[in-house]
Length: 106
Ligand SMILES: Cc1cc2nc3c(=O)[nH]c(=O)nc-3n(C[C@H](O)[C@H](O)[C@H](O)COP(=O)(O)O)c2cc1C
Image 1 (cartoon, helix red, strand yellow):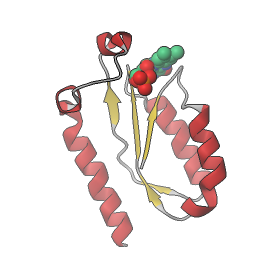
Image 2: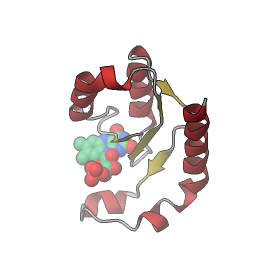
Image 3: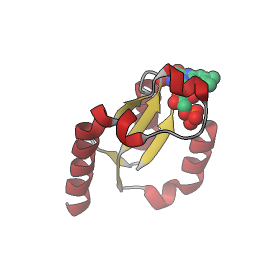
């Protein structure tokens, strides 16, 4: 499972660096992309999906895009109540994990 924040429409360089180091171990495995950000991070999720496809990872169809309120981002406390903040995303996360389980069982 790849979890990434979106910064200026992209995913962090540190994540790309990790992928570049570990791609042999991950090839042909199923993956889920979870992005988060003020707008959910869908743009960096799409970029990441393309890179993972190039490395022969099989990303499941559902990619949860978790939105964080601007007030929380600006407060930058490093702590959030995930159950409350991400409550509206629970069904999507469950769907993604169900797809991952199916892909792993295949
Ligand atoms: C420089 C900067 C750029 C950002 N760009 C985006 C963006 O393009 N899309 C988005 O949804 N959130 C954006 N955000 C919000 C980040 O995703 C936000 O900081 C993050 O969700 C909070 O988690 P963090 O503490 O891991 O940074 C940006 C934040 C910063 C500081």
